Length: 354
Image (cartoon, rainbow, N blue to C red; front, top):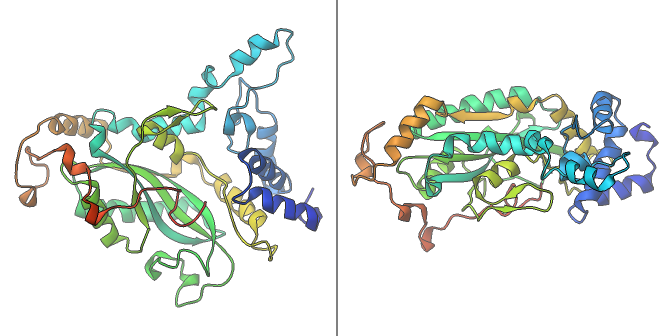
């Protein structure tokens, strides 16, 4: 079925299901319905429809891989199979895209005190809806790495990038023109869908607090609410077997590949269904391996920094020299004074539901 064959009533139903008031199950179903209308995604749709316990599709719109729903069984002993197929107990859980993302994001930080590892979200660039994820990541990766090299050369950073849909003329107006697509510059923001290219990551630094890191980032990436740091919450296991809270939970959240949209329904070329179609096309041609941005995460360097971070030696951090052997690392540095508070992350991008 082509997208043009969906009548107005059905499209309205899909728009509501994809919006902020829709359930997670309803969103996944609406994404699958939309994806089935796209001939460009024939291979992806076939892989999703053939998803099995032994060969999971690893797609976010799949009820099994995206939410942990057990697989159905044709065997006689259904209770045993259901237990075996439960993603919280099966070997397929360890290969799930969310678990893989969480392990990758947190790997270099496992030897550091958690109080020195700061989860953050950053809005990097406002792109067109037909963006090339690989090219955008290559450009923004070079820009971000150069910034860290100049301002925080001793840091360790890992970040997973993604996109969320928005309206170019009414959202992310705080983004400076240097960080938006040229077609949107000089006040030329038309009423059409754009893509907020953003990243969820973790940064470690031997002596800078989250507040000091935020100040440096906001000088390079100006704009209110564009950068937010989060205080890690206690680790909890969700009902679908994945983690919430802690660094591993943050990592699994970073790799979630959310499909949340909340756009007006009046224009069929710029509604929730159109936004989901654009996001599916972008992610389908954007391998997960090319969505990553790193700095200073090589194993040997991380091991050396972990050894140095265990040394709590008082020194004047204002005169700190790059790669010095002495730092001043105190737990109190992690907390921010009430007069200079940093907003906590309450959604993937502050002020807008992805």
